[in-house]
Image 1 (cartoon, helix red, strand yellow):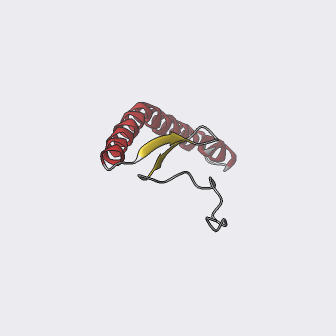
Image 2 (cartoon, helix red, strand yellow; image 1 turned 30 degrees about the horizontal axis):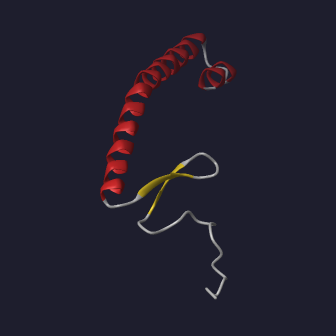
Amino acid sequence: MAAGIGFRSGADSTTAVVIVVIVVIVWAAFMALLPVGLVVSRHYGAKYSAQLEAAGFTPVTDQNGRLRYVPPGGQLAGHGNPFTGGA
């Protein structure tokens, strides 16, 4: 988009080429950092998952397939009827 704006802005061809080069460099940098972000995200996910399990939380897959952690003696939200009087 930045390259298109550079060409449409009426800038001379040298400025437009510089804008395109900068856009390509920034795009390449983001693409190079993407795997690093994925590794960091997995690291933190594993770290916090281990903390929750050590605290007694139980991993449960909800109806949408997402992993949730239920506290000891608890259940997923929406399960059970909170309005029953227990009688």
